[in-house]
Picture 1 (spheres, one colour):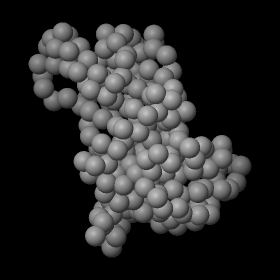
Picture 2: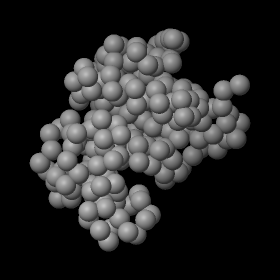
Picture 3: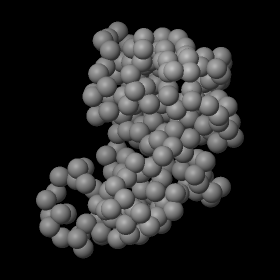
Length: 225
């Protein structure tokens, strides 16, 4: 039996323009890649940010863990346990790639005592996933795609049990997208659960186990592989 790791129940979210998410429910299981697909608009990103604890729903609840365990999980708990990579890179531009990868994550004090070791550690992590950013480069000098690679690599360092990726494939070449699909499959096989949003079905078809179709803030269909 599959173990549920995250559920959203009757989620609704409004902004000044009106209702963006309306009564959306979903379930995410261990080792699963769940795709959320819809045309360009705020719905997918808002839903991703709700599930990652960045935004709070106006009504409904988000629960970590098995069905029936129960209560609404706090935004702080969601942010601590759900990795998130959004459309815009969230990196410290005045720091190097290596510093952005490791700061606040790695507990080994020797990393911060030796910049050489810090760069070596970062280089190994980047090369492991086929990312080409220079560990010594400042983030301000990187391309948009390289920033997205670093942001994803930072999440991979922490190996979250749940990972939410918002329209990530748009940033990568066709080769990069295939590499990304391999990374996500490996994570899922190791037990991570992944939510991946996109406005293009073709981005998700190679690796998603299920697709939720989002239209006008509603889930209008669910497709299984």
